[in-house]
Length: 176
Image 1: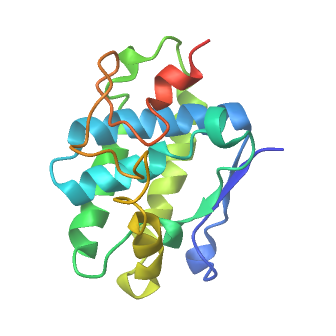
Image 2: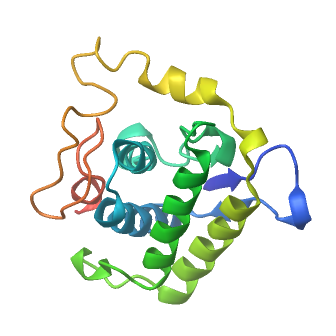
Image 3: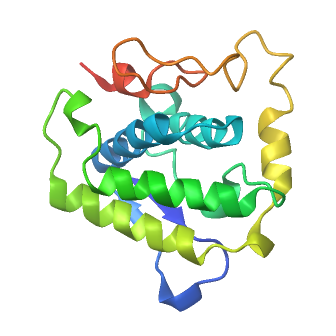
């Protein structure tokens, strides 16, 4: 099994979907969420990282966290800023930013290769690919649920300083 991240139904510039083992997916997400949590300033930026943190296989199930780029909670109004933020977070993750907070030494080559592939997908993604209904569906029940989709106040983990999702800390959940 494993997980696949796709650009969308348009295979621009022959960018193939990103396929990863379950373990590599967890490391990929931890590196990106670490970087994004340290880079996010606006609520929209924090929401993008929280959405990624919710792809927590320890909670939702191994091999079930693949997605297409258009499923991210993009908005057309802030698309350019959201895309620039994700690219900055990816650049930081590729540079190993905050990896010292992990309890293990990731295989740099494998993780960086996947982060770079994901970056190429984000670069190719365009505003006319945005499906704002994804964002609306994601936040729809935020104020009605006992455990909101987006934790109120955008709290961070005391141990790892990453944004918490409705599942808690992505890194704490994966530590054994």
